[in-house]
Length: 409
Ligand SMILES: Cc1cc2nc3c(=O)[nH]c(=O)nc-3n(C[C@H](O)[C@H](O)[C@H](O)COP(=O)(O)OP(=O)(O)OC[C@H]3O[C@@H](n4cnc5c(N)ncnc54)[C@H](O)[C@@H]3O)c2cc1C
Image 1 (tube, rainbow, N blue to C red):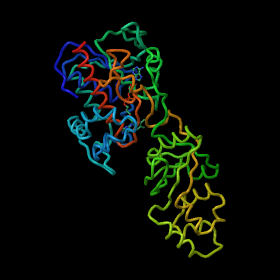
Image 2: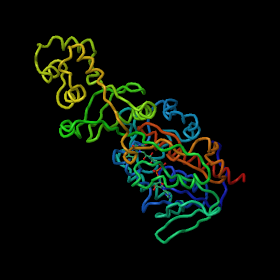
Image 3: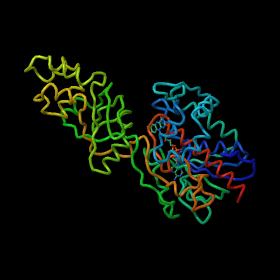
Image 4: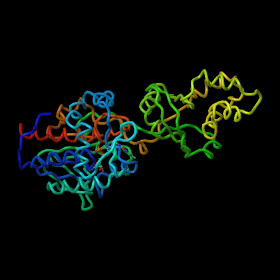
């Protein structure tokens, strides 16, 4: 994106104080603009803080072309923004914020503190030093002509600005602030929005009472899972209502789309990814006949506990199988999925403002002067730091777009 000429005295609004909104505010204020962030909650960036509970995977250290391709159908639309805020820029920026980062497993980048609060504190401190005003408990309630309208504890408040960036987030974890109430106000402007759906989410599996009581909360480690997305090794957790965890999130788009398109979905689990089918078959064939399934699985495949129980749960007739058939099951155990877990518990959401509604500067074509950024736009990505990176990148791209627009108008 072209560097933006310095222009002062514009008075811009950012609505939504998550990573997209804060990144936009920072760039605008660094260019000398007066910026007010309006945030619905009593404090900003609650989802960012929640992401910090699992270490704050802020970006990913991998081949950049591969990185940019991980946003599915939105990859090419997002590319210019990501070119302007690359993973190494995020690491440099975090370092400036006093949050030195390290590269963990599979290239995931985390602050050394493994939490978000110190970084957020310093980020808000920087915005304060740049004279950014933060108005909390201001929930955007649409337009009154050209005015922005907010619901506040003191009633309705109108505000006038020279341009606005909406950075209102998706609809997962609504208790953290983003509940999609803004959809109504953009609908009123005839702005197309793809319905929100859970992304990076767990799925419902109909466990028997016995299995649920015994194994809910148990991690299943060192397995691989195959869906329409491909095959990936990792781990997941048996939950009360189904399956959760990074390996499941990895397959969530493929599973969700299969459920939408065909009404059914399954994951094929390989419970012993280190062993070939041939070797496993040979080992099972060597076992004494007529022993219990538990003994056969333990001695022939080194499977015990929850992994062995999964076979019994999902294949009640497994004990009647030949060694070759049993080996096949252990290497490709079908796990039937019935539905995604509710969006209220998803890490992120798919759907949002359609790309056709947005120009290359992130401005809404039908509402000049109104820009959008972050997860409220129609893109999705796996976990791994792709989400926060794209939120910050689109926040900065919308801020650049707003500055260009305000010079040209
Ligand atoms: C449990 C969990 C763990 C996660 N871990 C990671 C991770 O490790 N790495 C990663 O990359 N991503 C992670 N994410 C996802 C990441 O946090 C989000 O993608 C990111 O926060 C979205 O940024 P955003 O600025 O677009 O929206 P948000 O962070 O949702 O911010 C939107 C803001 O707008 C405010 N708002 C909403 N509506 C209104 C309104 N009408 N008026 C005023 N304000 C409003 C909200 O209160 C909120 O503060 C995680 C998410 C969750 C839930």
